[in-house]
Image (tube, rainbow, N blue to C red; front, side, top):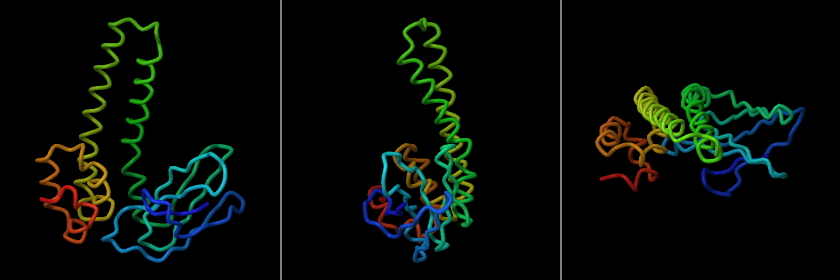
Length: 182
């Protein structure tokens, strides 16, 4: 397993699988560099979706490929990010299933498709509200900065600007917000 920069192939560290466990030891990241790092497999086709905040300099990552589960722990930021993502990830999962159902099930009537579309619209609205609430709860920390970053183009400009103004300067001045800074 390797750990890389977000959206990059630059490797920072690697770890060997020992009884399904991996430990990465990294130089402590600054809070200004709030984007998480990404864990990727060294071999095989199975992508890892694990993103980790490395501000605490040690990351523990456990994967059980038989059960297709993984866990990242040992850092308050990683734990907080995981907790904030539970409900939002669940909604995204349901939206994906409903979308596939509408696209692939040719037996659905127009009335059923309309009903599914209405439910999807409700879930999209709930997802948007939950995203904003997560950002607001964490606006003063690295998790909030990252959540605002990944949602910067999906929030309306007024909501984004209000949240961005509350973001601590160490995050707001980051190069990652160059594309949205006034």
